[in-house]
Length: 155
Length: 155
DNA sequence: GCCATTTAGTACTAATTAGAACTAAACTAA
DNA sequence: TTAGTTTAGTTCTAATTAGTACTAAATGGC
Image (cartoon, rainbow over all chains, first blue to last red; front, top):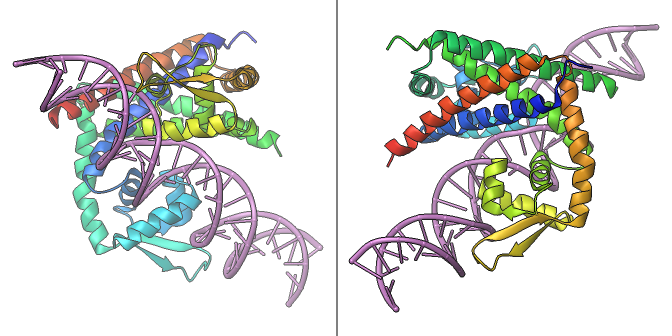
């Protein structure tokens, strides 16, 4: 195997972790000022401008696992931001949507946070941003394929 | 400001988060098989092949905040993998190092996990790996500078 | 129709997470 | 030196995290 170079893999991982950490710290700082936690913001941002969705769909979009999502939804429901509704067509499923207050909150915090994120990239060219999203998408795919392979092998 | 394009920032963030998640899932799967948690593995990997270091240095290298690190070290110390020693030259500081058993564990798990990570990238060229680490380093820098700016503004 | 399997969500656990308050020690400036 | 500040680490809290076990409901094959 001559396509892989041991010395070049660890730097990719290290920089990926550090870039993600930098994003998390920058983003969470603002989300906290808005009175939310990062997962709470993600849920509100995902439900905004939609009629609502099941826990499963919400989980897939936010990358929050179902066990965790139950607790996040509990806290948002306590705050009166989201509601849980039964679904006649599938009684196992729960339909989550923003309340009126939740929609109002979404209209406040979502554009504000987008603006805040854009500030960080104000000096970056469109080409640079496209290169990053394309390369990150490729890296994601490589890792997801490796994960899938592992999951199949353990069967 | 004509250098920033609103529609191009969100995809960068989305792909960064998804790439990181994919890494975490792939990596953690193996770390768990080794009987460790990801932060525990990071600490062992960082302390391996060193004489040891302070909590502060360990925190900077692993990106684990000090409050969290106390608990991680507690559990590793219970397992007999690391020890805490006083430092005569600075009595606020604690010197953390691997025990003999910890070094033995490091020699087992570190190469095994590196091999596992390399498997994921077996089809990637050296150029691809270098592009990823360079681009991720640039993205990390942009985000860290934005964070720093925020921290200065709040003073 | 009925049984086996799958699926959706909740409950529970141990560990991690960040932030804030706190203690003790070291440093610094006057 | 001494008061004020900074630094290292622990403690504490609320929330998140992933995994596992569990319940209830839907689905599929026969």
